[in-house]
Image (cartoon, rainbow, N blue to C red):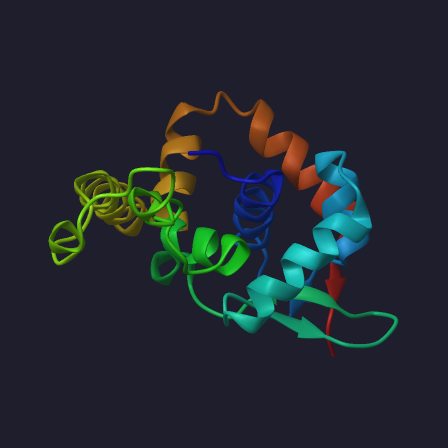
Amino acid sequence: MKFGDGVEQAIHSVAMLAGLEKGQVLSAAALAEFHGISPSYLLKHLQALSRAGIVATVPGPKGGYHLAKTPKEISLLDVVLAVEGPEPAFRCKEIRRNGPNPLPEKYYSAPCQINAAMLRAERAYRAELRQVTIADLLAQVTKDDDGSLAARSCAFLDANVRTQS
């Protein structure tokens, strides 16, 4: 399985927005600049996060994004599903029915065992992602930080945060 680049970008952006105080926002351009990514591509993912209720937007020239939920309420699965959609990664096309010698009809009453195995794996990885919150990630980063990560983020936030009145 392979997630698109947008999943990583969205998770990092949500984590950065988690550091904002009440009434503060960051623009999509600032988030893109901090991560060195395309603003238009990130904007697409921020819109998906907004539709999913993970981030909220403040319109206008001093507008931007902030979290719509607490970091504790946002799981990695929430972000993945917002960006990638809810469909399973594996989609059985039932190719057993194709070719010059398809299986007899009686074999189609039960799900394809390949599909069943892939769906079990999907449930397992989704369960794991559901257990990890943005708050959990931030706690681990804070624990491992020697101060340089916080300094980097704080300096950028000081220069780019917009305060709403």
